[in-house]
Image (cartoon, rainbow, N blue to C red; front, side, top):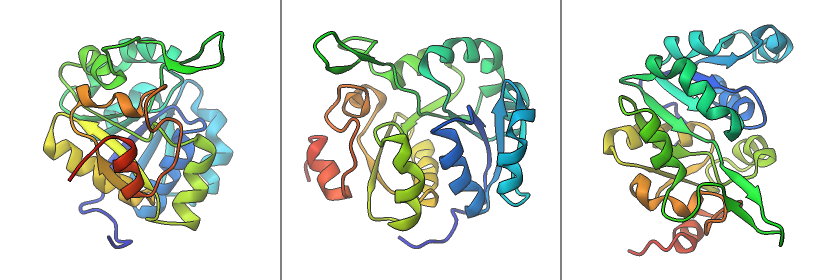
Length: 219
């Protein structure tokens, strides 16, 4: 893959300008996409937005969702349901990248999903957003590495994604590439347990080939 931007540039809403939303949105801004960072208090993002050089802006969650064709959900998972109750109607017909993680640490020190066996985070979000197209991505890499590995070692590390719509996954794969990673398709939302908390690739980085092996992909 090359370093060229995906075509055409996208209008992207990043809902949650924290440890995931900021680095990923920053990658997209540098790549030339129109990025709106949504926040409960957009005025608090003034210094961050100023550091991006003028291409991005801050807005409320609702305004960021409304302005976008593609939306990244990057709030802490406990805040997700409330967020979707607020902006869910504005996400109809759009591609929604779910980067939230329903993570909990068990008493014996294991990282697992709060959803339990048999339900992936992607499927759970898709049930809450029946009129949107949900794709899982940016979930299994530790957030402190999203910026550094996507800049210093561009297109060396793999990034898993999963979704039920092939066209939507193509768009998200382009955006993964624009963020400096190599997209690795794990299949549908029901096949995405590997990138959820407690899954085979969470919370780790792999080369694309090693990622496919770790996720149990063959061929």
